[in-house]
Amino acid sequence: MYVDEVLSRLRKLYPGGYSHVNKDPFYLLISTVLSQRTRDDVTIPATQKLFSVFATVEKMAGADVNEVQDLIRDVGFYRVKAQRIIDISRIILQDYGGVVPDSIDELLKLPGVGRKTANCVLGYGFGQDVIAVDTHVHRISNRMGLVDTSDPDETEKELEKLVSKQDWKDINGLMVLFGQNVCRPVGPKCRECIMNDICPKII
Ligand code: SF4
Image: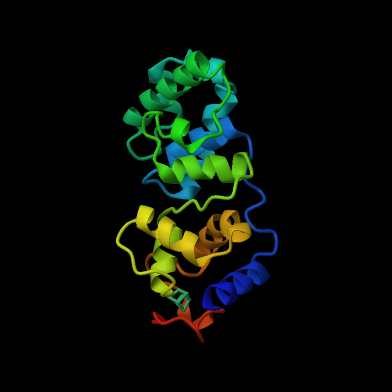
């Protein structure tokens, strides 16, 4: 099947996958909130800076919002996100005993947490079979003709029908790497792309 060929080529291109990601559920949750509408090269250092000062749920829950704002100033919507991060930490501390919940329904109750963020936490942090559809997964799946959808939630549903369950949690990491390096949002490198003999959107 076409989708299996795509995943097989991505695995050959990125044999290590996205294994360098920090798998701590709280770190993942906060970093994914920070990543919303922000590039990875900005999100990663901002998250590291934030956790170098507030390393635990308890510390983050008690943080001063102005201090958090200063630490994450480079990310988009940093004022909103600073308050959100503190609110999320307080809820996790008060309602979940300081432990990030491992269910989609509970994660979606947290402020600013949508399906992409929740699925990143469940997939990377808890090893669950989920498809975290971010901007890269949505764009590449549509460009390559795997799906024909208008929003990431729809893409998630369509990919779930198309892809074997054991492959679900690999999709995000493989497509993020491919989207950052080859099938970029602007200026995709189609000429050197390993998919250019099968991709319908080659430019
Ligand atoms: S050929 Fe171009 S559009 Fe198709 S997957 Fe490769 S980079 Fe993306």
